[in-house]
Image (cartoon, one colour):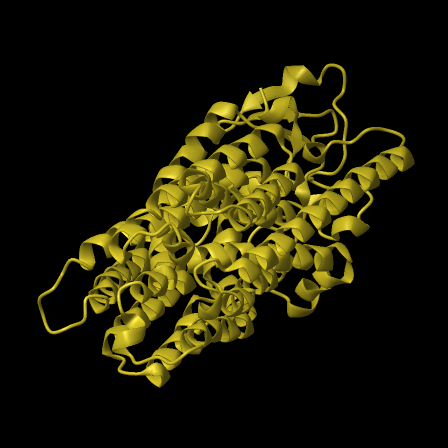
Length: 509
């Protein structure tokens, strides 16, 4: 048997066909693969599904949990400011009108400026080294928040926090593409990304507990940063020594499993596995116009994503509860967001469709914002609270599936890193927009902010459908030119270094 009932040629072979009597030459190698030898001596590898399942289980148990915990701490360190705001941060630091929004905004400037540089460093020196170092850095800066006394101190810390977190998510996306086939990636990245929704929920629970601390020399909200910062720093040491450099060099795999891991990436992820970074070649990803449309969709995604992540406590606060209960009521929407993310990601991998599920996420966001802005919240509490659930459904799923979508279509590892390192920070840069549309003067309704967020969601929905339609039409055009129907999975990625310029290329939509 072979993967997806198809045989893929080994990375070293050319296009060859089996002779009629070649089935007599089938053997099994040490990697658990069936090897078919043709009449001219060419070896065709047919991968055993059992061997693949055993291999991916090892990655799922050894790599995914560590990355998920790392991202959980990353998300906690990024979102805890909203929780602290509900418990007196502005009063303690004597912030004036508009300064809190400035503190939120300044985070995203270095985030965008340094992300491509750190992502390139991650590609060059290995994500297994750069990710833990970044984690150590943002853990230290989170701890330093406990010492700030005024607006200037907190703004400085937030600047350096933005630098240290900038390439974290882009690097994790790239890192996972070196372990999993394209059709396996969405659900794995979703499990990892669900840590953000869980972190937001856990942050609410942690804040609920910490804000009951009324003893000690520190203001209640400062203990939140002490706990989260210390845990982040401690886990970074573990991650530095634990994470493998790549699938084909992992210490917990046998040599046969390493060979299989290399082969999987060669035929269904990368054009050249573990390719050395070439700056000029990597930036050629921007020669194709679809890259800029992807960046446009990232912008439309960023506003809803950052609005919900940064201001969900304030949105829920309109329901009329006190600060402690408001943080508690953010837990359920965030947990439901993680569940919806997993459902859509598993459905996406099962159907091997990407853009319809991205579009569905944008639709959820649009509806959630419009409903919340359009009803009388005080009189329709249950409907309003349900709308906050739709907001979280519509922000988590598109973020993951959009990144998986364009990574599935880039076989060149360097180009994959570059586009991701621009796209993800660009979405996060939209936090500048979110930070400045949620104004205290518009509280508690925040109608301008909700309307703006809904507009970005509607635009993202439109662009996603247009790009998906183009990919379907272009695949049909390529099939007509080739005189046969070619599926994405039929073309080994080792042939797709040139992306859409390659005749064999087919869009994974």
